[in-house]
Length: 18
Image (cartoon, rainbow, N blue to C red; front, side):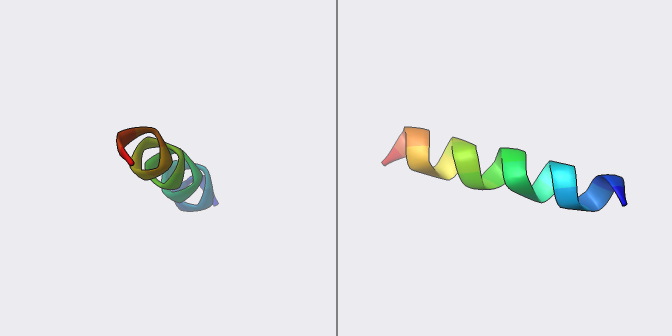
């Protein structure tokens, strides 16, 4: 599902914010 991709992007954003 596309939700998985969205979650992956969210996780990447969190790492970038760290």
